[in-house]
Image (cartoon, rainbow, N blue to C red):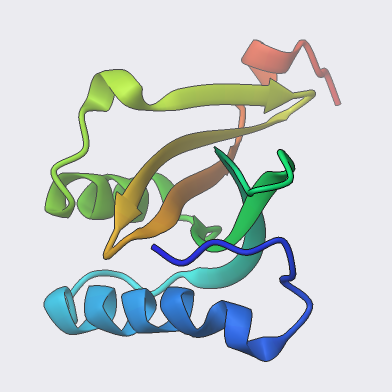
Length: 123
């Protein structure tokens, strides 16, 4: 994995782009997602002691089938269901799990609305 403190150049996205191509080549029949490439703190430090950044990818699932799509990808990548996090805010929630694919951080996120009874909303 290439890490750098300078992620302002297009070249910093090469590893993530290659990993994305490998991921989609290996799993062409899985549901499409919204793809985001973003800087991720690796936890490693450079020679000056600064935390390093690398480009990571997020596959986000937003449609009515978001949870089913998320689950298909989680299973295909062999990710442990116990590692999936649930976060909520108001009537909105999401499941997420992070791994490394082809040396690149990869996060799957499935977004969904909570039922009214779970949020206390009475409209």
